[in-house]
Image: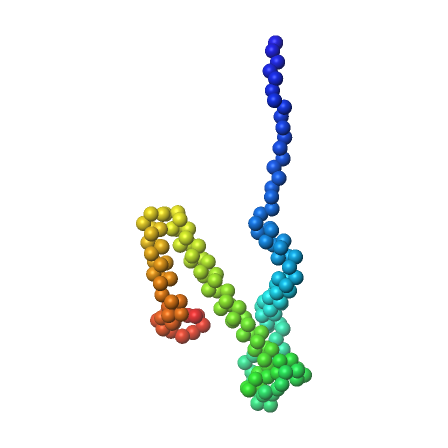
Length: 161
């Protein structure tokens, strides 16, 4: 009987290194300025989203008696405007629309750009070339001119914006 000699088995344990975004998150977590900015941003978004419960008054009802109250007036921390409406309430409710107008275009661009990029990458060839030429035409126009042209074609309003 012969015995086959084999090389000793070496066990290697695969150690997974942390990913890129883990390192970015770790560095941001250690930066006090970034954390302070994140806290302010979270507070603003939370206040705007909770506007129905936080606002002290109705943002549309005014009063001639309450008009132009200065900042710090009891009951009106940020004062009132020329129509007697509470400025804190108007700030909270207006922030909702501003937040929507800031997030909606980015989300739509992500969806449309992601879909076009996926189609172009998957199909390739002439489809890719066609999508790229259409994208080049869009980027050839100044963005403000394009926005004015689209607004002129669709008409005024928040929905069209």
